Image 1 (spheres, helix red, strand yellow):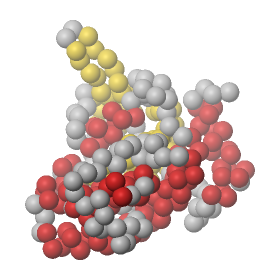
Image 2 (image 1 turned 180 degrees about the horizontal axis):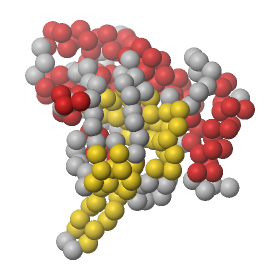
Image 3 (image 1 turned 30 degrees about the horizontal axis):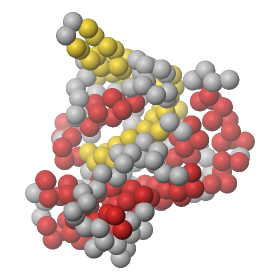
Image 4 (image 1 turned 30 degrees about the vertical axis):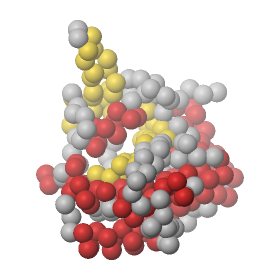
Length: 245
């Protein structure tokens, strides 16, 4: 995307939500998107998902054959599982909506449940799972239709600190195994550095790109990497860009 711009209009008033956002996201990247509340991060995700158009700049995703309805998976802050469907049937929801072959989709859903650590929970109901387990199911749901791009809007923001740390580790494992392209919105600077292969830093609204840079840390990443000087340098860089002393 180059100099992307989004304006909301209400009657005779205009509100500039996103201004001059430029970054290149490549297949297999994990891009963390960080910035203060109200800076336009969620709006940017909606543009990438096809839910919103843009009013300026250029956006190209995956060439001319990209179909947002088919090629995007979404994970929200809350799992948003349907309480009357089993975990397996919740994961299968996008496949059902898209009319994908049921047998193949069911096999893929079972494989994804195993990948996200929910083997044996296919027939459980959402209320029988913890918050972290429900969010794992929502990640499997986002992947079941084999999208090219997975968008995550504060996916771990509702979890307690310890569960959030564990889910960060799980997210990296799922990313490595799925080979998908992820864009993850977060308010946590440490989470942005820990998860991202690249980090996009947005200023206070309207969202402007303060920086977009690769994150090069020890692989595979484990929690102890947060104690290293290199990790601290990335965190300090983001604090400085956001004007946090």
